[in-house]
Image (cartoon, rainbow, N blue to C red; front, side, top):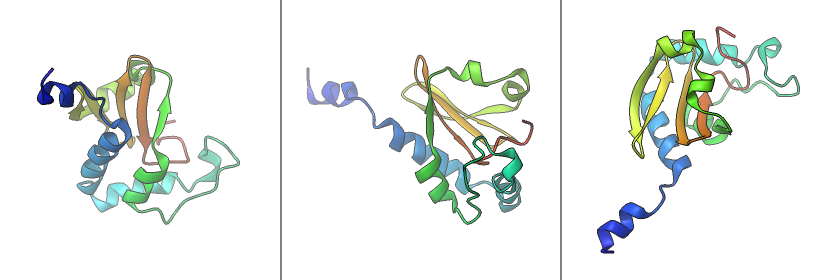
Length: 130
């Protein structure tokens, strides 16, 4: 195996690549959309876990740094028909689509068959249509 093949055979640093692509997309998100989605993240009655605390001052970079999660499921299991209709492909990582659900602030990528890396802009709260 030559050096190029060895480089290509090395696993990617999935979290870093995902975070980089999400940061790129978030960087182009209009301020009004960022503010709208982050406002959900401050509504305690919408929190996934009632013990969570609001994080109103998070920057876009801080959100990506601290709130990327991994779930043992596929994007298809996450994407209800409503979300699937609003999902757009914003990039590809390791040959698989990185999707963003417009209006909901959901980023997701199938890192492996049953492992999805994701970020909700509304963290720690559920998405707007939840």
